[in-house]
Amino acid sequence: MENKTSKYFKYAAGEIVLVVIGILIALQINNWNENRKINNQETIYLQDLKNDITFDIETLNARVANNNLMVHNIDTILTLISSKKKFTEQDETLLANMTLTLFGESYFIPEKGTINQIQSSSSGSFIKNKTLRDLIFRYYSNSERVEKNMEQSIQIYQHQIITPKLVHPAIAKRSMNINAEVSPLNMSLLIKDNAYLNALTLKSIGTQNQNIQYLKIIGKAEEILSIINTELSND
Image 1 (cartoon, rainbow, N blue to C red):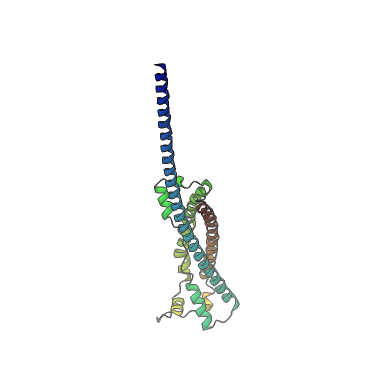
Image 2: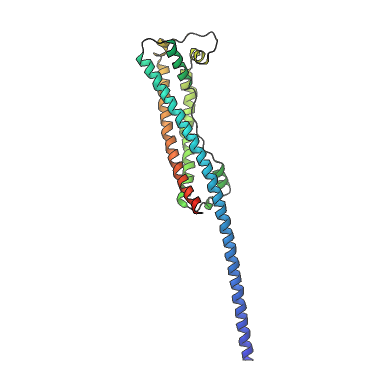
């Protein structure tokens, strides 16, 4: 009787061990599947973020190049004004064309499709690398501050102060070849117009400051891209 009882307990203990092992294996498989899903989702997010930030860098580089052109044009205008006592028709056409390039302004808004998706799904934890995660969220928060504090101010200055002081019907007529009855472009008066000269200076300073911020954003974006590429290569 004692032998039968002992065998029964051994059998029962063996069954319990097998059940526990089975549960542990099932949990391990479930955890492995969950980790695989998380890793796959992280890879998707990182690839999408890479595309977004690459697009941002391309956009910023184009903005910087355009801003550099405007600063160059301003320098050329100021050099032309200060170096000549008599202006040819070619000089006036050059000044008109270069002035027209200053009517626009750069404006940068980062591509936020992926980061919005991450934030709306509360899945920021899918990016396991804390350094990368912090850099990404700092990149977008900094870009938002630049947009609100600098970009909008520059746009207001451009529309309300700079462009109105640069606009002259004769400039538009000469550069766009418009057949309209307007006063001739009087360079001798224009170059003594403090409002026009101040507008050029403001445009140059604002544009150069804008490029300083753009280059900082590009540097942060390239740092993020480098880490993302490392993370993707390790998957």
